[in-house]
Length: 417
Image (cartoon, rainbow, N blue to C red; front, side):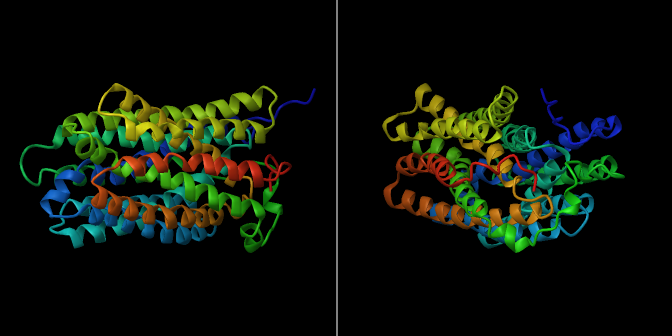
């Protein structure tokens, strides 16, 4: 019987001991990323009232963030393959934190739109850096779990944010500004810790002799698998970003919950997404360890999460109450649970060009979700209902699952290329 390859890419104990500090910082980076992002949605009702915005204008704030994220994904994706991850990661995190901090000082809609747009551009650097780091330090069986840890930080950040908001917000007009400033300041501390932990060769690639394999980047991007990845991420990101951005508004304006109730539930909802994210990575790893092929383990897990996301289809028929909230929790777990599996598929394409793969995929992710945000807001303005839009977006992960099932090659998933 062949000896299974280790989940950690490399056998030197000193290097392995440094995996966990790096993994912890990746989780925290994702948490900070979403804390800066979620400050807006958690105070969306206050800000739209203070600046006299329509629902479509609020959608435009999310769209501006998204379009900039698409541009930033492409830019930082190429940069991540050419410069030191150690310094690039620290720089982008400080820059997006600065934009979150500046959002607490805006005086009108136009200034807020500018800050949110720049926030989106710099936040985009997180994913090429984070995914490339996971690709470097873990092998193909362990990457879904590693991606789960990375992605789960988004939920942790989103859980913490509404609790911070609830603690800092008062009845005073403008009290929403302090949380923006406090959350924005956190990034500096992360950057210092990252530079300390990643000294030396902590981020060197340990899987095989991939440095000897040279493939033109355009060949990687024209690979059949790349086109599948573009379709998958466009669908699953649209689902999660719309649910993330509009859930507090839906609860307050669509079902009559008070602000405090919506904030507390938002924290619980992101807790459910965290369970879904870590659970998906753990299930894929468990299946692979018990004899399933890497592809089968991933596909089974992706399908299960997509099935959970379909729970939103029942929303239009449900009033406020425990059943509505329970189905939203199930849908949230599934909507984020597909992401670690998706990232694992992207990591099959190329170590050498991982940043470019992630960056170009990020363009697809954020080319469609901003349009979805605008259309969602326009639909709510026209119908005064969030229900149909929420029901529709829950179906998109299953469409992504179908894409993978029909078009992903059966023989290349576990190959290190």
